[in-house]
Image (tube, rainbow, N blue to C red):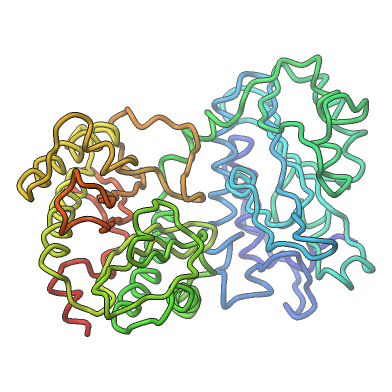
Length: 492
């Protein structure tokens, strides 16, 4: 039975038909009206406006992102493909912790970016059919299955791939091995990042990620084709955020920043207690959940860049700092924040001197995160290194040789978006462009070594904000997380 007469309210059909217009370079058809039924009778594998109007607005496929924007993304990809080429993108599979106990599902970022479809075991194909943006969108997914849905919850099904997600072609993912060879055979070039791997669980994963020697696997199907990595093309599209994406990242930043400031107001007995409080506050403030495993590092633990054990005590008696690197996620988009503050609420003289030196450099680098500065992330990193080196000299550090690389061992920043380290492999040596979202995170980590002034040894400080590059000035995505010494100390 077609879902279209049931789910296609006037708003959804206007969006769906407009999305098709993007795909085939035509003007949107005139608005048509269709019958609808109660949203309570609709069952899909993810929230939709019809079923979850408290989460999505009319026309949205995922929070804040409309069906039209997803269609435009696919059209933008099609423009970059040569004639008769195809792009093949696989969804993530369910990953199991043990036995039948699974981890929380997280969709493949490229698949999510192009489809908004948030279920496992699915395949998207963008098939270039002519000039410009002309293409067909294939979405193969799991069919409706009453028995499976009794255990695992609703699936969207194949008809929804057409009616909701605006695919031109769909089918049972379990039959894709019979469909894909013909599509690949007629393609001039295959763009994909699907790789072989072993030890996967489902038939879906065994087909796409199984050993290359398998006669019925994906590797066998494409072995005679001209295969080119898709990631570089998608990086070019994903690295520039739309207005809708920036709104989502600002919300994630605001909700997360407020959680940070709330955490600074109170003492916590352990790193775990602080981590759990942030996780809770992210969600209560409006995020879907944490964007990544947080760093909550008290005292000497702050010297490890990615310390994530979070199992030590936080002693206010020792006058130590706690370094917290965490952030929330909303609608698939993340924020990335680091703050360092005194466990007892008051900086010591040495902590304050080092903290303000790092903060000075961080503020300066944030201010240069704009198009008019004509600067790259790599150049910003070099500026940060030089500035930190000068600041440390003033504090009595011997900065001869390669000292700065020992005290500041990581890069100043990275791209953010659907991933914490977004657009993997995208270079950091090009001038920053409007719509790029980045982190600015200088840090100094002073080991217990006689080379360094004794009163700074064992101190690790990092200050990080998420920033959106604009023409004349940066848009701060995380300003609600206080970072001035006076503001931090005023919270207690």
